[in-house]
Length: 322
Image (cartoon, rainbow, N blue to C red):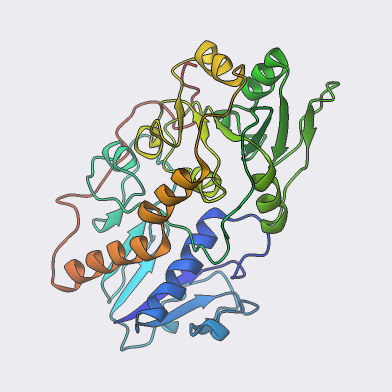
């Protein structure tokens, strides 16, 4: 197949970028499987050394004239505002807004994410494990925890992470912004790049993810698993699909969350966690699933019976109880 992507940012991304990494890893994996991959993108993108043909885009206007005639399918990671002559598939990584509608061939990133938009079509995100080598450190302590998300985004719930760590007298490392605190146990690193993120994951005991919204997926969760560390999260969105008793703990409220952090022993097995993520959340699995979607579309099938739409009458960032 000849598959075209479009992204306005520089790829591969240099610092933080969840969706950007997914797009890039997926394109590389398609090339590895013999597909021809094109990117309409930023002229400074360095993708051609990975076998991806770059079609430079000089402005933010209509880029459809740049599409070659022999492209089989266009895969976008946003809902397009205009029509294409070629078949289109869309991946949505975020939550919609009340009444928002999506392309008929939209795929979401977890079963719950899809259901919240009136769909049953989803493909889990997957990691390129070339960027996440196995961590061999022995983990027996339960003292250092990591918050890895946009700190200013209230739905990610940094507030309860800080509160629980202070009450439990545990250390909290914050990556993704800064939080002022007089406590020596709370340390902020601001926005971190991939190298610093891996370094933090390699030396903490667990990732904290007590989100207060319906998390579409949570790439940081599987990044934590790649380092062999468990995830302590809430019960919202995709988390019941991503977290089980072998790889973490689901907490229904703050009291349960603090109780887990207050424990004295790490009972999780790093190899079990790493094996779990390698089996279920790899770029190989993700790309195989997307290829099956491509085949359905090229056979003339619509992935959804009708246009998906965000079903809740509340805003996606309205805080859920915790």
